[in-house]
Length: 101
Image 1 (tube, one colour):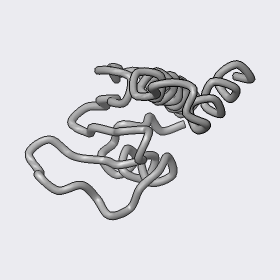
Image 2: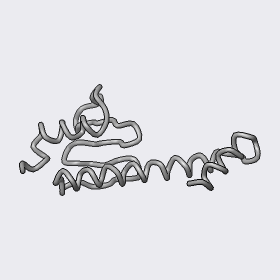
Image 3: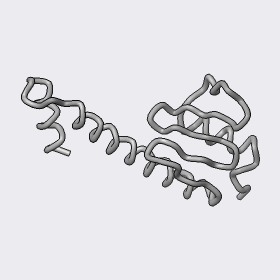
Image 4: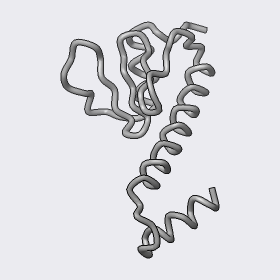
């Protein structure tokens, strides 16, 4: 992490081209967010989900994008106005995708 911060600083100061590096940092952040969401899903008891890429998790017919906290349901072109993990949890409960304990 410290190395990334130094490289970001050098990029800001104009020592690096930057485009490829910022994509790399963004990709790493996305992977960390996905890992955090996966941990929450496991904790909630959700077992039927797939990680589509470093910024897309599919749970049933719900598509969740951790970097923005946005939720889409298959067949709907618009996302929900509410965002984040708490909203995802609420939506999963409403759709019956979190097992009752």
